Image 1 (cartoon, rainbow, N blue to C red):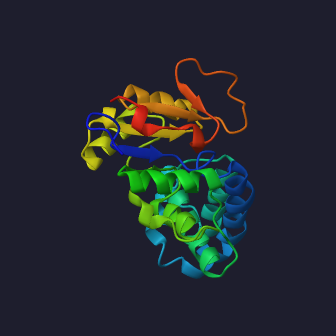
Image 2 (cartoon, helix red, strand yellow):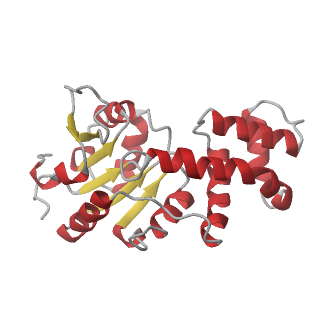
Length: 233
């Protein structure tokens, strides 16, 4: 059960935290890369605003649709966390999930603990660089079924960059809790640093044992090692 003065909500990253990094990098990103040209060609009118956002980001309003696709593919290669790209990726992935070509990967320990925490009264939230639409697609198409009922809300880059503490302050305000009552989980120590600066208790997910010690923050190798009810706000 949640404690009266302790953690009330849990905010978690996706890639490397609830889900395999290889699934995102080796399955989702290549899928979007391959399907971008055809998708943009087919839906150019419907996604004109997004394509113009890419032109704005590149400071070049004269880019053709084909050149915009090249920019988007370059952003994928560079792992850019830009909203136009993330929005389009989400739309392409939706088509892939609906076609049965994609199935979301979630670690079994994450599934089990998320369900347990929800039952215990914790409010669960996602914060990922992937669009909210992409997040919902991932969690609604898993081997464990539709997990979206577990979550009270989702946040993406439209809230703010994940490496800025102000983004976590905004999330806390939108959730309606003091940052001290929201536990943040991520495999990215820079994100952990930003959340901690905003006042959130944090835990580093180090599934592969590659952190080589993170003395400033608590480290867990899986969700099974995390006990939010024992963390004081």
